[in-house]
Every structure is written in structure tokens, then in C-alpha cells.
Image 1: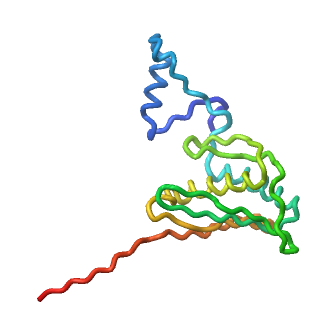
Image 2 (image 1 turned 90 degrees about the vertical axis):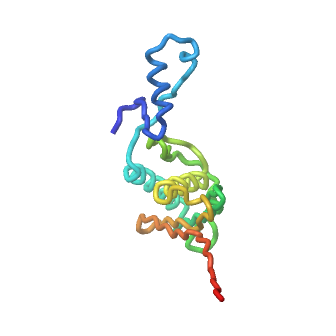
Image 3 (image 1 turned 180 degrees about the horizontal axis):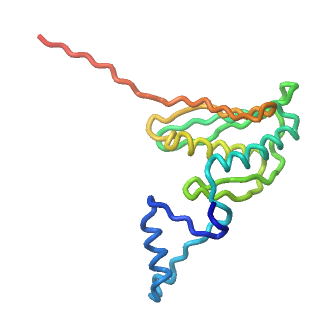
Length: 176
């Protein structure tokens, strides 16, 4: 675990690392204008993030009396998102997810988790997008993918059903 306020630099961002070095060691006015913000939060693994986020989201759903939440997502052509979020009550009616909660969110590039405040619907959407980025990075590219993320309140579980779209080509050859 990294200390609060530590810089998190990845090999995928070498220009950022070079800029950080230059910024700290040069008196050049152009380099002084480069500012690299420190992440506000802690860097942690995806598993640690889930261990913090699931109880908050499941607790909020339980507080509404919801048995489960269903998040549908769809994407292709380099675009995609969670499109529909519903939570069902035992009476089969849909729960109101507009109330605000404080919940952990995670930056997938840095691994930094911080607290945020948003509607339960937005928090569930955010959680779904973090889960998708971790398990199916690039799921929305090319022909894309479609699926659901279901959160079960009774057994504290999350189930992802993910289907990748695949374009097939059938060929034929005739020689005479």
C-alpha cells in the first residue's frame, strides 16, 4: 500500500514520468508550468477495492429493501457504457436509486481509491465500469460486447455475464 499523497507512475505513461523528473530538477519556466497532481486517495488492488465497495453498495441496496440490482451494459466501435441500472424489491417493483450515498470509487489507471458522493444509481454504474475495466479491458472495442452485472444482496455476491460479439466470415472456393 502506498502512503497518502504518493505519486503513482506507470510504465504505460513514460512521458509523465519524464515530465515529473524534469519538473522537479529544472528551473526552466516552461517546465515549472507542468503540474502533476497527487492522487487524493490510496492505491490498492482491485480485490481490496471490491472488499471496500461491495459492502457499501450492498448495504445501500439492503437499506432500500432491494433483493438484487441488475446493471446492463453494451458497447461496440470503441464506445460503450452501463446503460440500465435497476434494483428490484421483493414485491417485484423497482427501487428508487436516486438517493445519494458516499461510496469508494477507483481510478483504473492508477489504482487509487477515493470516496465519492453520488446517487446510488451512479455509484452502481461506476462500480460496473470499474469491474468491466478490470476483467474485460477494451470490451467496448471493435465488435464489442454486451452483458449484465447482477448484485445479490442476500449472499453478498456479484455475478458478471459477459458476451463478446464476434464477426464471422464464411468462405467458399471453386476451382474448375
